[in-house]
Length: 384
Image 1: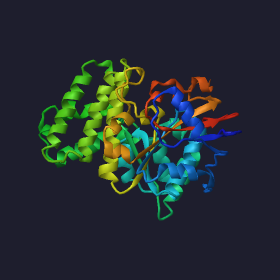
Image 2: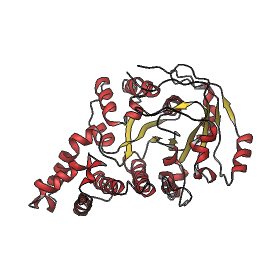
Image 3: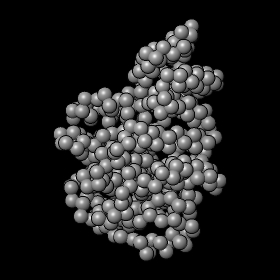
Image 4: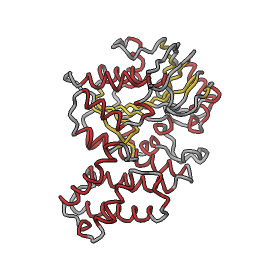
C-alpha cells in the first residue's frame, strides 16, 4: 500500500455567509479566517476544531465536499472532521455519494463484524475512495471500531446509480420479492419473467446498456408502472417507492449522458430527494454527515452560466426546502497547490488558479463555507 508522505497544511475556516461577488469573497475571507495548523485524522485530539464546531452550531446535516474525487489530502481532513462530528457533535450517520440501495438495504442487513464491514465497504462505496490511502483510516479502522462501542457510526448512501455489488447481485431479487409480496398486477404479466425482471438487471450495467436504443423506453415504461402499482399499497415515502424513483432517474440520467449538464441535473435532483428521505423518514432523530463532491453540495440554483454540470445542483434543490436547508451546514474544499489524481487516472497539478472552487460559476452565489488546504507535497493515492 502506498502512503501519503509529506503534508504541510493550513486550513482556512469560514463561517456561513451570503456571497454576492468575487470582491466580497475576498473581503469575507480576510475578515473571517481561522487558521488551523495541522490535519491529524489518526487521533482523537480535536482542540483545533472549536471554531469549526461553533460554525456548525445546531445543524442536523453537515455536508463535506471535495474539489476532485482524487483529493487525498481533503479525504484526510474529512476523516478528522468526521471523527469530531461523531464523537463531539453527536453525528451518528455518514452518507456517501454511492449506491442508495446498497448502503441502505444492504447495510441494514449486514452483520456488523469487522470482516463483513470491510468487505461490504469495498464492494459498495466507489473505489475512488475505498482504494485511496487517504480513506483507509476512516473505512477500515474507525468505522468498524465504532461497532465495538455503544455509539456506532452508521453508513448510508444517496446516489441514484444503483450498480455496486449489493445492487448487482440482489436488487432484482429483492424487488421481485417485494412485488410478489404485495401482489402487484405486473407480476401476472406474461412478460414479467422474460422481459420485465431482466430490465432491473440491465440497470446494473449502466451506462453501457443503451446500445439498444429502445431499452430506455422499456425501462421507463415498466419502472413507472411498478411505481404506480406500489402506490396502491405503499405510502409515497416508502423505501421501495423511492427505489423505483431512483431507477427512473438513473435511466433518464444515462439516456442523457451525452447531453452533459442535463445528465448531472437529473442525478442531482434525485440525490436531493434521497437525502431528504434520509433526514425526514429513515433518520429523523439523527444527525447526518454527507460526503460528496463540491458541486453536489453547493447551493447552485437555476444558474445558466454553469453548463458542464447543470443549472441546479443537489444542494440547490435541497435549498428549496427552507426547513431542511436551515438545518444544514455546507463545507467545501479547495486546494492552494499540490497534485491530485483519481484511482487509475492521470495525476495533474492543481494550483489555486485552476481550483474547481474558484473556477466554477457557483462560487459567486450563496454556496458553502470553505476549507483551503496548503499542501507542500502529497504522494499517494492507490493501494498496491
